[in-house]
Image (cartoon, rainbow over all chains, first blue to last red; front, side, top):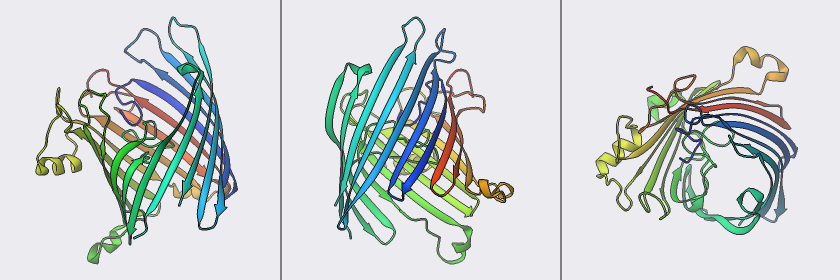
Length: 97
Length: 232
C-alpha cells in the first residue's frame, strides 16, 4: 500500500502546528499516536512519534536551495516485547535550477 | 517549454533499523510545462489529497516512484456553457515499481480529479491500480482506460489490484464569521481496497481532519482509521 495502510487495521491521531517566520522559512512541531492490530492480534501495537521540523529556502539568483531538518523521537510498544525508543534525525536539501 | 530539474539529498540515522547511516539522492526529475499543462519524468514522491501526508491511496508514506506524470498545476474551467460549473484539476501518473515484489516491475497508475463548484466546497476522487509487470495482469488499452476512470471493487484473487478514495473539503460559512476561525477547513476522505472488505466506525478507511490557517501559522488535527475485518 502506498498511502495509509488500508487493510492494515490501524487507527491514529495526528496533530501539527506550523509557524512561518517568512514566506520561505518555517518551523513546525507534530505528534502522532497510532495503534495497529485491531481484530487481528490479541493485543494492540502502539507507536508514538513526536517531531520538530524546520525549513529554509536560500535565495540565489533565479535559482534556490532549500534546506530542511527534522528531529523525531518515537516509541513502539508491541505485545510481549519490551518497549523500543528511537531518535531519528533527517536533513535534506533540494536544489532547483 | 520550461525544463526544470530538481534533486534531493537525504541523510538519515535511525537506531530502530540498526544504527545505520545513509546518504543518498532519492528524488530527481525533469519537468516541461506549457500553458496549464505539466509533464514530469523521473523519480518523485506523490502527495495527493487534503490530508497532512497525502490521502488513503497516494501519500509520501511510500518511497519516491519512478514515474511519468501529467498534471494541470492550476485549476481550470470548462469552455462554453460549462464555464460556470466550477473549477477542475487533473493529475495522472504511471510508475514502474521495483523488481523485488510479487509481480516484478508492475506498473502503478493513478488518477486524481478535483472539482470545486463553489468557494466553500471541493470534491476529490483518487483511483489507483496496479497491473502489468512480470506475472501480472495485462490490460488492453480499452480495459486500462475503463479501470483508470472507474474503480473495480468486485475483483478477487490474482487480478488487478486497486484502491479508490473520495474526499470533500468544506469551509463552514457560519464559522468563518468568527475572525479567529476564518481560515478553518474540514475534510473527510473515505478509501476502499478492491480485494479486501473494509469495515470501520464509518464503514471503511477514513481520514477526518481539520486545518486552521491564521496567516503566519496553521494548526492541523487528523483522525485516521482503516479496517479489513468482516464485510462492508
